[in-house]
Length: 551
Image (tube, rainbow, N blue to C red; front, top):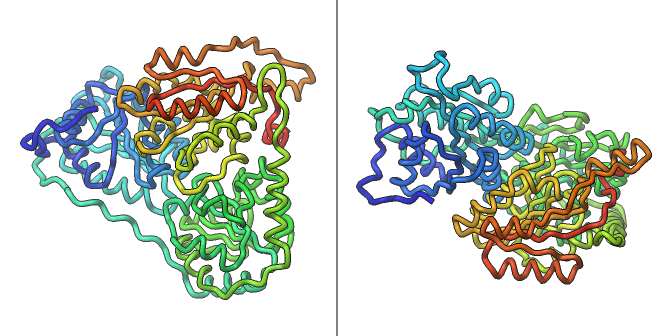
């Protein structure tokens, strides 16, 4: 980690120093990066100004770690990458952050302005790529305007639904001397739209007439919070389900929680969307997780609230669509007279969900335990403040339904984009975002291989997280659907890798755990050790609720 040398070295003298000074003013906690000569000015500034710089093994991992920081803390994450392939390695994390709605600032180098269009080494026009996976991407060619550009990026990043932004800076601009005074105050947050009278009255009317309401809490609530949300749930006795970033926004051990708002692993939710006479969708739209609204009842009335007008009415027309702050609507909801719900509505839904969840546990076989038994064993041994990360494929569809988040920022689901590779960096990034919380990553034997070297990153900086490899030796998210499609078993022929030795080789601890008791012992030992770790769990190859759902 680069640290400040002495107070006399903190002067903001060049473009790199201006960027770091702005990062500090904006509340950035860590800068994630992979070194390259063109970004040395940023590295020098991090050392002089005392902003921790986390050097990772790959630019994609650096950007995923920055996104994890945002998902845990609710504050913007930041990554700095070198030119050309350094930036193209950031494309997939940009896409993931865009789909997830997480605020990440990516600064990418470019060849010096005097070399523009001359075929400089590693130079490539990456702006078109980054414009496609961010809310805003631009090139700055004036060191004195870097902080201005960062202010623009800040406003773009936070306006409406948050998302990633990208600024490209030629290397000579990074090292150019400043003539303007640097900015030292935090950039202002964009305003959030409030409720207007006409639409508010329409929402009041729909809610007052509802007897079977369903509350779905969406991603935007993570960044636009109201401390009256639990009060609103309890005042009206509302059944509620939570989407990705909203997991834990109300304690999911609450009596009214009816599971994740993720239809493929929650049949109770699918049925409820048909039966409800009103769905209140806060900070989200009807996308894949909610079956695009296709299973909403024909007579169900919809109240949708989000600050991004483009998401209103998307896929399913709302009866009342409010381009407003979800937190502002929560304040309204908490102040309304208690709704008169149909007897047994909420308790019935919660009871059905709990029965469904209890029925998910299956038997193991001669190759390993059932994946749900493995997930339950881990959560049974981990403390309440644990941060969980789940992979894409079969893994997150098993874990989604088992996890119950007591607080926000404790669950990072990597699967909404379909991109493998985010899981391990998310675990590392979460360990930097909240060093006092244990971090557990659930990943398959396919996904772990993308960035397993980031265990070394955590070990170098004295951070710890646990990778639980649910190993079916099959890459089951591919093999099992192929078997269903083609009517025959497709043997991948994958050897069982010794992931424990991989962990040990990277400075961590390794465990092979074949049953629930061994899993729990490994979790406890790994947490107590303070070292990054891999727990390899042989699991039964079994189709997940999601795979059965999409087939």
